[in-house]
Image 1: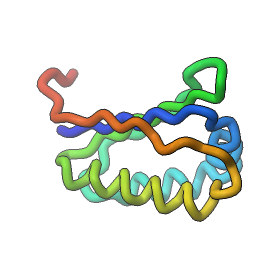
Image 2: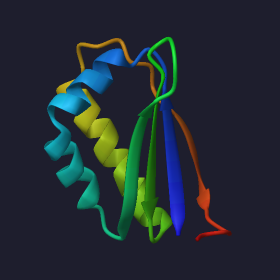
Image 3: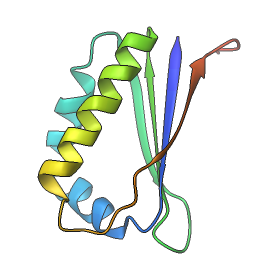
Length: 95
């Protein structure tokens, strides 16, 4: 399996939009080929947000990155959200 973590700063507005459009976010990400799991969390003060997507392969996480960027541009473009820091890799322990 392959995992991608996207970390955003100054993203309070992103949280608001994601909560308001939760079903749309679910449909968007769960439709990624090989999708396994998705998590979104606030990471503390300063509007920190992190999302985690788990897919069967790198192709799936690449697609999730593309879809997330497109969705943010379309739905939260007025907010001052910095581009995410992206960490990704193949899992070697899974239980």
